[in-house]
Image (cartoon, rainbow, N blue to C red; front, side, top):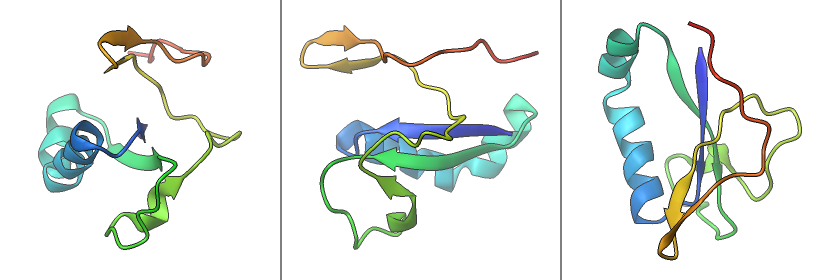
Length: 88
């Protein structure tokens, strides 16, 4: 299983969440693994969202979700997290 965390729930983050929830079955088949949205990190309140249970304001200490670079404010931002290459 691959757990995904989205950093930010703006235009891109909410779109990624929608794609993962809407096309989850197809994504699972194509990557031959279960891909699940585990956390959404954002400082704003989205308590009315259908994904409200996934929101947090801090990176969970027990998280095994992988992080990827994001394009923000005109440049690439790389997370300061221990990144690991997934086993194949």
